[in-house]
Image 1: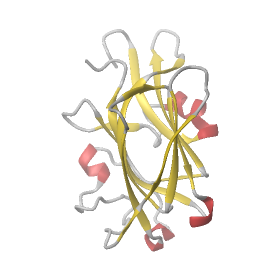
Image 2: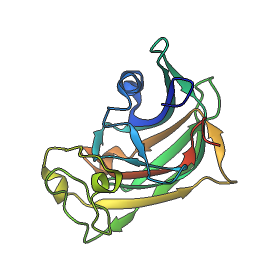
Image 3: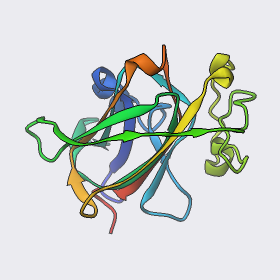
Image 4: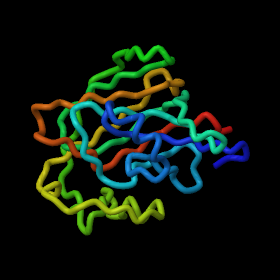
Length: 193
């Protein structure tokens, strides 16, 4: 919460669930956590299962009237590990809601990933994401450990850009269910100096 009584946050979830998730932030598992001592790095606190379309948006909640307002954020790129081979990236620059195609990216197969044990996702370095962020968010253990994961790295072409939303369309034929194991966003919220 900043000095004006506003809380700014990033959410990543199914495109249809954005309004409900933003109303629950910052306690929602879909709400990204700011990396310690970094103003432009945000992590998903635990693995997330979504449908074929995921959406990243920045929201502002106010303590005066509990309203949730979508706002622009500066997007620089992302790193993601998921179980789909390719992802289409769309961006929306203004409040019109019109998505513009940015790129299609193919992931690099990841071998020897640490299993998702005890409900906590681990990074390639073996540190638990939730341990890195000081959160104790748990996810139920499942067959996610059996899936083949792919790593994606995207740098925003032409440098960071102000966006309203970032939409990721996952290839449905490459996975029966889509699991976003890790997601790291490079960007700045409206309040960052």
